[in-house]
Length: 457
Image 1 (cartoon, rainbow, N blue to C red):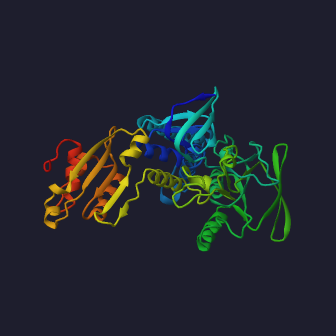
Image 2 (image 1 turned 135 degrees about the vertical axis):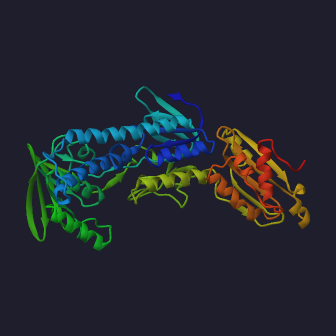
Image 3 (image 1 turned 120 degrees about the vertical axis):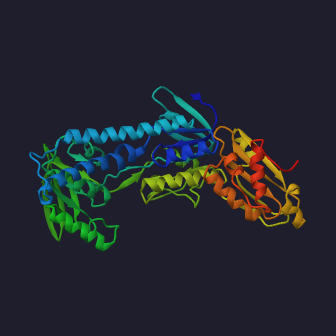
């Protein structure tokens, strides 16, 4: 086994949660290693949100063209090329994924292709195609996402009984399609294939399509689908989905009657399950629940120093939620929540202190301003203390702020905002602060970091 260099943070999974967490951590000065078994972007960019929206746009355009006469627009021989539609979708996905790979290079995120397993709260083993690596890290973020769920009697074969992944790349239009599951994924694919001419039947186990949406919203969509010619059976209990040579037979019960449906393709879209197999959660004693990994309000698992974000922690299974969680987890790791102590002198801080920055190997510059040089502090007779700011050396953003002295607990919020905005010493220092105030000490400390401080010794 080969040992890799030590890193501040290992992120497992490069989906919308993981890659955003990795980039944000790098912006905050951390040395980050990303482990992903496939291409960056996760399910969303490779096999979900992005490519599916490209397909839907093609379907919408085809449908609008067919309606052109109603708007006084005529066109002859309106048709489509499903293979070209799919190729366009894959091309867009490739562009987005390549963009993520570029961001890894831009922000110096080390990327390793392989399968990760937790060995301890500070060690991860990665099986690559060539070797097994041992990564040592101060902190770990799990962002392994989900995969399509299989239910008894609905085993997928990837050809006739498929998941959303295969539905994205069909090159031959199915004449008859059944979609099992009327959630967001199922309804989107039902719409797409019906627009192109497939005979689509939707089977939903719950009383209505789009079951988590408002009842009125669900009813409107269901009625619209039915006007388009789609069949929707709710309260449908599927007993079996079986391939019979070149077709699929579905046996189910709906409205008190047993039914048999024969189609060319069956799309199983009955939800997702967390990708936790083989991660080594049991080795560390990380707690889980029925939908994934259990975390606290800051996305930390039951093991300190190990965080989990995105779909792997359960619903809502949404890319933008995963990204927000990635940022929150990393900023919590970096201490970006202001901390205040209301003794005298007051103490307030946000972000990294020098000790933590050194432990993490973050290179930084410092700006200081003593309150004894502040006219406002002198007038108040409260001159003990200072403002101390830490700026990450490579990109220049503020990564830590520490104030001791008068009004410290009121002044810290400007600096919390500055960290979130990745403000530089020049940006803070060149922002005009009112005089005489305690706050102008922040301006002077920022100017000190770039050698342009006016006041103080």
